[in-house]
Every structure is written in C-alpha cells, then in structure tokens.
Length: 385
Image 1 (cartoon, rainbow, N blue to C red):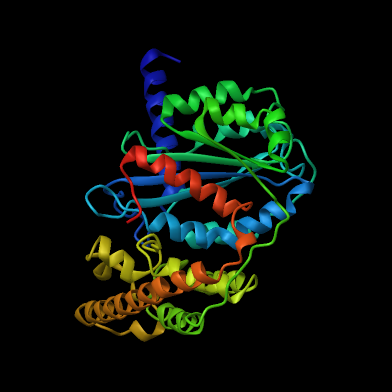
Image 2: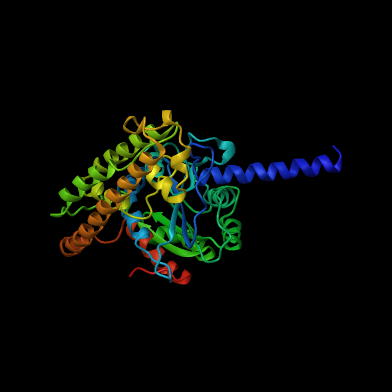
C-alpha cells in the first residue's frame, strides 16, 4: 500500500471511530442527524458494576436507586446558576457469560442523556460466574467512552465489586494513571467490610485515581418512606406521559419503553416510581431522538421534516402549521406538569427527611456515590443550592 493510500485509510478509520463514539452518546433522529451537542458544563458518570454470581444485591440496589441518583445529579448547579448536562454510562464486568477475550467486560450503554435506555439496560442485567478484572474494565471505559476534553466538566468513574482490586493482567495502577491523564476521577466501592476492601487494594485504587474509597452493604434493602405527596405525583406522571409525541421509525417503541421503565421502577415500590417521575420532571430527562417536543426545543425545523407516516395517528393529516401549534401546546402542558411535580417534590423531600428511620442512612450505593459526587463537584464549582 502506497503512503497516500495508507494516509487516506487512516483518516477514514479515525472518522468512523469518532462517528461510532458519537452514536453511543446521541441516538440518531428520524432524519439521520444527531441532536445538537450539549452546551455548557457536564457531569459525565460511568458506572462499572460487577455482575458475578455474588453481586445480585448490588445490581438490585442499582435498579432501585437509579432515579434517586439522577435526581441528586440534576439538582446541581453551575457557577452561573444553570444546570449541568447529565450523561451516564453503564458497564458490566466479572460475568462469565461475557467473552473471555474481552476480559469478561461489556459496555452496556455508552455515555448518554437517554435515561430510559440506562434504566432498560440496567434492568436487563443478570449475574453469572466471576472473573473480576478491575484494572481492565477501568481502562476499557477510559478508551471506549467519548469523554470530553473540557477541564470544566466533572468526569467520574464509579467501580463496584467484592473481589481483590488486583485481579487480571492489566494493573489498576496503569488504568488510574490513564484516568488522571484524561481528567477522570476513579471512585471505588467495595461491597463488603471496609477493612477487607482496604486489604484488597480498593482504597489504593481510589487514592491513585484521585477519588474516594467507600464500602457498602450490598444486600441491604433500600428503605422507602411513603409520603402524602406520592399519589398526586404518580397522577401527574401519567399526565406527563401524554405530552410525549413520538416520531420516527422507532418512536412508538421508545414511547412504550418509557411506560415500561415506569413499571420497572414501580416494581420496587411506589416511592421508587415517584423518584422516577421526579427525574422525568427535570432538565436531565431528554428524549430528542424520539419525542417531537424535546426535538423541537433543539431544532424547531424538525417538525417540518418528519414524514407523515412516522407520526402518531392524532397528527396524521395535520398541516405543518397545525403540527407546530400542537407541539407547542404539548410543550406548555409538559412544563406546567413538571413544575407542579418539582414543587410537590420539595415538600416530599422535607417529609422524608423528617420521617426517615435513623438506622436507614448510609451503607447503600446511592448514599456512597452521592457523598463522593458532592465532594468532587466542588472542584468544578458545581453546587447544590
């Protein structure tokens, strides 16, 4: 191969790789384009979960606490008072059902703003076997994910497991050094006794990664506090779902997925479903790839471009002008519902704080993660006001 052909091939390879990484973070719209890039400061969080046989309790906590974590992240503010963008990624490792050639590691979801997708994939996780290569999964997530180059963004890895941090051919020391180069903080969560985690070098990994070492009781059940505001928020959630206008080849199935994730959350408790409804009322919940209301907020011309056959039945036969009015009406209705949910949730949180059992605090995934996030966010001038 002559030098010119080699150079062209190299450029094409890099271009395709960049396209792949972008597609992981931003699902394609109906017209084949991606939503506009996020503006402003971002929180990018990769959650690396051990899915070996002994980790059912950890996965259960992640499923039951996802929306509490999202709500805390979405409540943060940048120095100028705006909210940061929230992008989450999910990896599983230590599962013998995964290819040994990949180190028993799988990227479940790349960095994305699609919270329903994160929920869908999280609920599909199953445990099996056990070869937990912590150094390798950290390095894999650093190399595969589209981490931003901005020093203003908060870039975090949370890795959770219960075997020694030293397993595998790729040392955690190398992986944590790579994380520092990329400006990514590595936090470690040992599922078991605090001192046992230290002996297994989980704390050493956090120290080298600039993060926090934590231990949790993986089999501890999430404590929910029912409140007088739950029923009304649940009713508003049903109304909120009716403001979504699907479009595109996969739009209808994504809208159905939205309702399925409501049910997944409800399977843990009514309070967990309410936590999800609160997330859906926040700026972090975006569905531009399949919902016309969110898509039009990014690009108002999208309403003109959608083919009639890719619209819901109630919009078929509408002129472009009528479409725009309909989308605007749904947007206004959504804003009103979201504001009411947020107001009710403030009262709900005060009630929970007053009635939460004293022995329920700490020892769980969400509490461990959020303490670390708040501490590390201060370095990026993010705050909770």
